Amino acid sequence: MTVETIFEYFPNLSENQKEQFKKLEELYKDWNQKINVVSRKDIDELYLRHVLHSLGIAKFTSFNNGASILDVGTGGGFPGIPLAILYPDVHFTLVDSIAKKIKVVNEVVEGLQLTNVTTINKRVEEIPGQFDFIVSRAVAAMPTFVHWVKGKIKKVSQHDIRNGILYLKGGNLEEELKDYRTAQIYELTKYFKEDFFETKKLVYLPQKYTGK
Image (cartoon, rainbow, N blue to C red; front, side):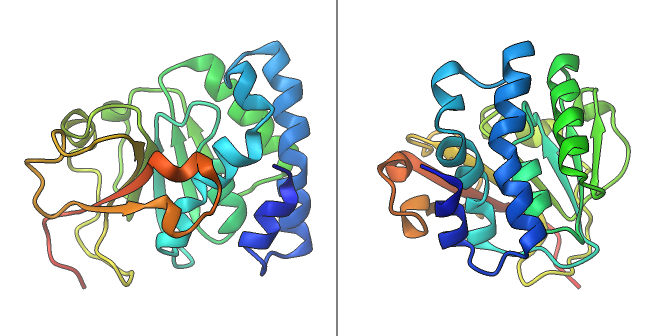
């Protein structure tokens, strides 16, 4: 899959956003040779397995200008970097406990000249502040993840949906979500036609507090 598929799914990108998405492949291939943060087979399918997958969140909901988003266990910068390109007026904080991964993320952020991204090399439990939404890609089972991010979601919601967790995950989620009655599961095949998404899901877990 090429970057053109991204443009087809997101037809309203500016020229600058298109250029940033185009640059992703070169930047990641270059840095992945130095510091391996994306598996060998996945680097050749970067736009499908990482970029488009990350943007599944944007097919479900959009972020208002001025919103703050926390990407937990960002790894090589997913889903945070593709979302930061898509929403230049939203601030993204990308957190990972592994220093070499944050180094790569920093280089990609600099290469793309993204001004709306902050990176932190710490465990998420150690960082201060609260955010409108917390995003991630399958870094832990939901009960563990919810424990990690406890207290980090703003109580007052400014979006069409309540603040909460937007979690990209695959497989059977019934067992790990059994204690979360408000969790909503969306099949990514609803948004994308590629076979890769047949087992991929987005879990939306709204916070317990009522909004506005």
